[in-house]
Amino acid sequence: MRKARWLANWQNSSSKPVIYHCISRVVDRRFVFGERECEAFRMYLRMYENFSGCRVLSYCMMSNHFHLLLEVPPMAEEGLSDGELLKRLSGLYSEAFVAGVAAELEEARRQVSAGVVEEAVVVARIHARFTYRMHDLSEFMKGLLIRFTRWFNRIHSRTGTLWEERFKSVIVESGVAARTMAAYIDLNPLRAGMVEDPADYRWSSYGEAMGGGAKGNGKKAREGLVRAYFCDQGVGFEAEKWREVSRLYRRLMGIELQRKSGHAQVQSRGPVTKNTADLLESADNETALPDLDMAAMLRCRVRYFTDGAVIGSKTFVNEAFELARDRFTSKRKDGARRLRGSGKPAAGLLWSARDLRVGIG
Picture: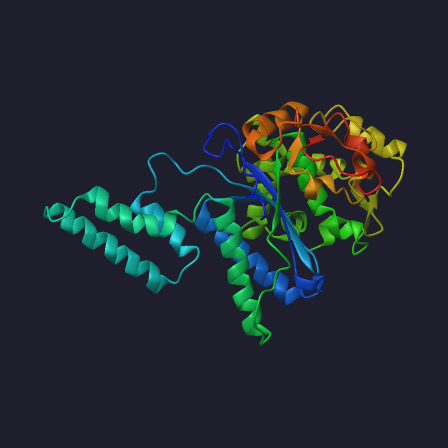
């Protein structure tokens, strides 16, 4: 019997962000994501973001899998107003469906005014039909994967499941861990040799942020990356900070700011060059990671980022471990495990809840 998913025990906190790195692969790892499929998946991703109240910080769609850095904020204590509920529904359902729910709410309010029913009962029932699927990681992923699978099966005249197994999730601390994970996700196409600059890959948050225009999804992608980079400093989804974040983000990824001959100057695998080291240590880059091998590490597969269960500072991982103590035997005394293998450049700065074998990341 498989264990229940490890969820952040502070999921109702308004001060401590709840962030997950989610990964799901296509069954048999078949290469099924072309441009049409990626466009549809991104459409559904934004639809569920608008509906659920969860926020996409970073994402990347590859040929047979996708990565998603998702923040799951708590539902407001007072719940949603009727207007907010209808606005959320309009992000996922047809106008006719939303109009039907609006009519239900209006009739419920009329009955309350007439003294026929109690407001707390009838209105709450209408809200509850939808709100249980909001601000919830599993419901977000379930809805997204099912909706896309239905579209994919219809378009390709097939039936059955599309996904290999239940999705993986890793709890990610805000701050260094969140921005490192965002960069790791956006660098997927570069690691695969598909592009020389992640800005040239359309189906990622960074590619969308750089090429999506001033409005629409380009703006949402910029907001998400700003939040990923500065959420530990209380910065929200503020697209106006994108100019500052974009410079820091490219430095974190080991990419020079200026393009030459149509291509970005990208740090290759191996030791970080002096130019990249200077960028990482520059005075206006205080939020970048101090380890000069970090940019090179992000160009390698780091299994801790997909299988580490919890990623963050030693204190953060140990706190998460203590809050989920019942998941472990009494032999396990603490939670934080030092990164090894391909994750070694981040050792001491980032820690994992799982101790993976040396040599495989």
